[in-house]
Length: 318
Image 1 (cartoon, rainbow, N blue to C red):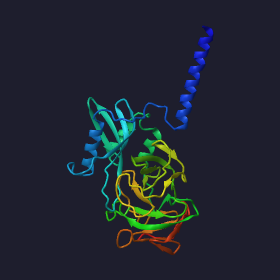
Image 2 (tube, one colour; image 1 turned 30 degrees about the horizontal axis):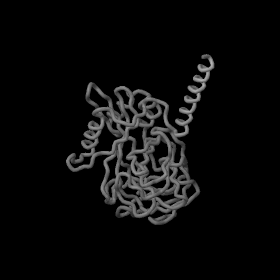
Image 3 (cartoon, rainbow, N blue to C red; image 1 turned 135 degrees about the horizontal axis):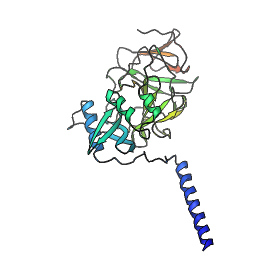
Image 4 (cartoon, rainbow, N blue to C red; image 1 turned 90 degrees about the horizontal axis):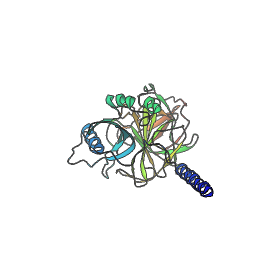
């Protein structure tokens, strides 16, 4: 009898060790705040809020792709993205926080005052203290916003598409297309990473930085393997350039579509902003424009060397 007890104990111990080892190997969280299915009524509330804020026609707009990141008790946190067609545009995603009262959910989207207020009240298991600081960080002022270009410092990539909107001609021109090099897209500054519209082995990667800016990356493949909300360092691998369209759009060749936002959710024009030592300027139309450094001008289609986040440019806002 005593022998059977010891054998049973050893089996249980091995089972526990095996379970924990598998979870660690697969990078699975061992917390209860992570979810894979939505609580009742949450998706409907998120959908209604997203379509209302984006001023979309509910009868015509496609249903948002909702990513459930964390849920505990009466609180939930995630992201929602409205897919786009096959036109020259890219989708935009919004993080959300939601609180349940009775059988109703109150949902706030990133960029709203309500979002800032609700994330502060959300439990730590749903929105961490580090995320709360990132979501409410003041925005850096000035030309140099303290970001590198999204590849290895010292390497040169092509600016395949100059300043343009996240949907081509849409204003402001907050996006630039890059390609070339070793194809590895890297974080231009430290931040908290999220994957939204996770479909077809791809996603939009969102980085919420500590300087009041958010950057997003689209069309990539072989994405970073990290839990949503993980703090990553500058230079961390995000993915590889590609032609992936997890939430629609178009891509004629492998590249990364990088966009700039503020933590209030608004698109920020890249005109006059310095990244990687280059100051970017709009052209007379979308996808035109150029970058300038110390009097050297590189037009769309030219190569840019990444001089890092702290490199100054002699360019001036025009």
